[in-house]
Length: 195
Image (cartoon, rainbow, N blue to C red; front, side, top):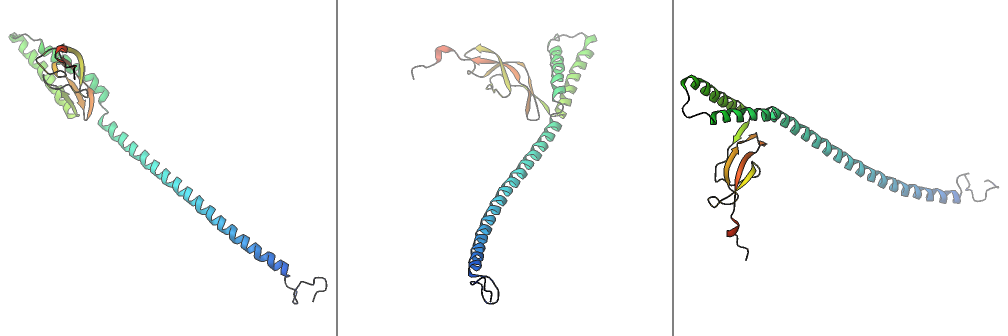
């Protein structure tokens, strides 16, 4: 036995005080382990959330890129097509102003202009460009028509097309140029304001 330390047990082991301190330290370690585990679980949850968000963002970017690529393929000719619309309009104007009795020497020329216009329209249709020609009396649709003027009339319902100035065009499902039209304007006398 050790005379200097009366609390020490016979075989020279730990004192009661050291044993109590060791037990408390083990409990503290257990509590800190639980706290550490909770902290790690919280960090894992945050990292999982970040990973899910990053994955979702990557998927969205990929989908947007695929859509942009598809749109670029579909609508690559848009600028060129807009420029060609003027050519088509001019060919139509040339055919519209031809006299009723065309001289024999000019019939071939007129037929050539008509064939050129027809071939141009066929080529544009092959690339998904279609003519939008509204009918007189058709309801005005702001998605495909542009009102150039209003015509006061009682012949057509207000808001319906009275005259087509120039046809419109669409490429695939997008408007390339709206049809330019004159729209019927309702007569102010017929409005019921006493409702």
